[in-house]
Length: 195
Length: 195
Image 1 (cartoon, each protein chain N blue to C red):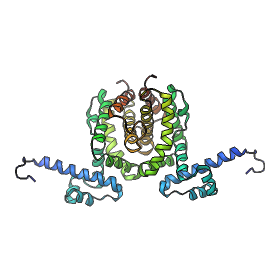
Image 2 (image 1 turned 90 degrees about the vertical axis):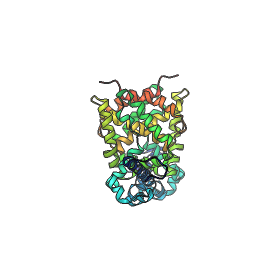
Image 3 (image 1 turned 135 degrees about the vertical axis):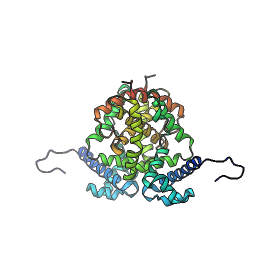
Image 4 (image 1 turned 45 degrees about the vertical axis):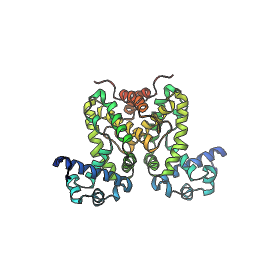
């Protein structure tokens, strides 16, 4: 809907904005209520849209959860980065996402879901992480490519849990630049030289 | 209690065995029921001892949880290893613990507790991880010692979650030797050269 005096907005841009509002509300509700108790109807109500629109955009609750997890995870620049830039990009994606958004707590709580709900774990693994690890391992290449990609994502996830969820001594209040400075050589060593 | 024909057992050894049985049952119950719903009385019942004995050994539920977490975490050889051997020892401790014991599932579920219960998180951080990170950072030395130790433990925890809880593609069914081979250089790069 365009209001008087505002720039006209394309149909595509309107859809993108509506999707973004739905996903933001979905992340909050999944975080607060957990996977099982969250309904399409409740998310639609919070986003101020018709439940049928949520279904049209995301299919079902599983699809909505997968989309919400993907948005809460890495921003995605790492998925298309050249091999040598993957470590820096993975760190930048994660820190940019979690340091700067007000819904860091919601994102962390969302990650809890995969540890406590079997279906959430399946979606997180099969519909989110499989795709990320697949993209990264194709760029990494070589016989251990998939294992390297999985270890890379695991180390990053562990860092996020240690910093944002557990708030470990030394890590909880470290400067993001110091985390990047120490973690990047570690992730580079993990990838090793290209084959 | 010694039975006819058995070797006599010292008082110290009997206590050690009883503690071990109590901790094993505590780990299972914390894993199944979560921190809040687990009681000293229920753990004592499963271990076949008097609740007063559990209180005598571990103080209260928080103390029992801390002891159970510590046992489920690293075996501890890393805490006293020389600096250069910390990465290998941390990996060996974790893989030995989680690969070989039948209660791997219980250990993973126990780790869930710190993400879902505020008091469990506090104990995990203040009574388990603080001590481990303190020991490691004293050996690591230098200005970033505590941050390096926290990142090391976070990467290891992330690897465990990716392998045992999420069962990521490439990582869930990797050989432990391959994980060690790839992770060790990464953890060594994280620690860097001694100051």
